[in-house]
Length: 493
Image (tube, rainbow, N blue to C red; front, side):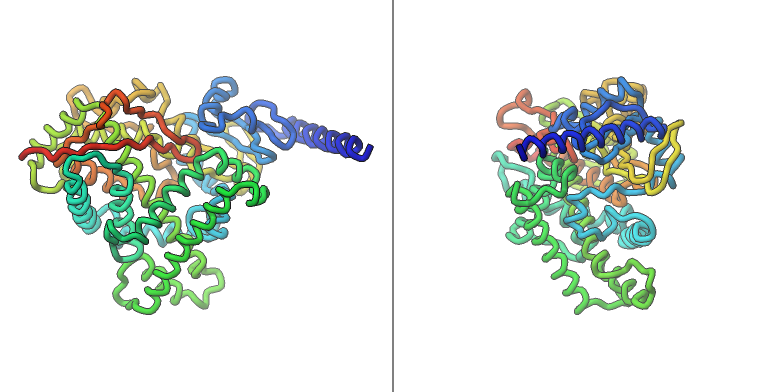
């Protein structure tokens, strides 16, 4: 009797919640969207492996601004270049809020640049952009660091002697060393076991974020860790990253010279000391630790993953690889490492690299934005507290802007004369005030590393190009490409 009474009461509560939600939606001009279940919302309607595919279908029915519910959390999804540009660029101030991703909140303890809002975000973003620029992000100084790291990568790949190998950790080491130079003021050997273990943690963390279980945690963060050993393992690993970062910060405190900063940490510690008596300052150890964690995670995996996907594309399409090699040989030759000035003379190569980024679609749903106040947009109300998803996937696959949106086609970035042409819908780094702070660095890395590799090696897959599948292995939070053994045959001079 007690069990049946409890079930009846639970049913009545669920029904009441559903009726209250329906009544609220009728009073507020929310964007249209499908009805959901009490407590679960539209969760069961989404493809758990690639939720953005379901959202695209919903857009075809409800339009480019759609309301859905994940659990009890309201989301407004923005679709297509015109809508996303209008929101993030033309109404930038309304859409600068960052959604609180529960897994990231727990990993950063609520501090740092990536998930902050308001004054904290303004102070940390302004400081981070200016500091990274001072250390050469997007400039000649950084270019030399990347070229030096290219030499280490080429040497390591040469050592494989044209035998099959997995490029994942070579590329992770290379890209991570660039961000390590910026943030920690040092690079690490490819044979450093501790360094490799940290890179493995970064890779596994991103995979977990992109898994159905990781996404479930973001919807129901109150689920106890004991329900999933993956939860516990992921957060334990993140603590190892935090410990490494704290050790570096302590080392910097003991050895830094405020008049001669070596890296990002030195600059932050100097600013922290300058503002120690400022009650409104966001320069504290918690924000330093978590912002360094943000930079280290984001600056390592996304760029190295893009380069790895580029190698898969070139193995899949050997004619495109050969065309790039011929263009690179005619402009740079076989010995000199490329520089950024070469890009304007390598239109086909530049087009291939842009198309790699478009097709990979590394963060298909973007990082979530957040309505920090009530927003009026396109005749609809977006109430304060709503998560906003400006879906980059819908821009990078929009038929209006791409001739063959679902297939690899470098001509998306070439005019009829073979010159490189920009496409406004190329937004892999998002747009507006919340766009990626490391965009210029990532663009430089991808270009210089890819050109250096194609200049010196021909890449093939042991099982043949027909066995390469360019569809992602994971595609929820991030689109992670499949991993293949590759053979890198040195090119004859």
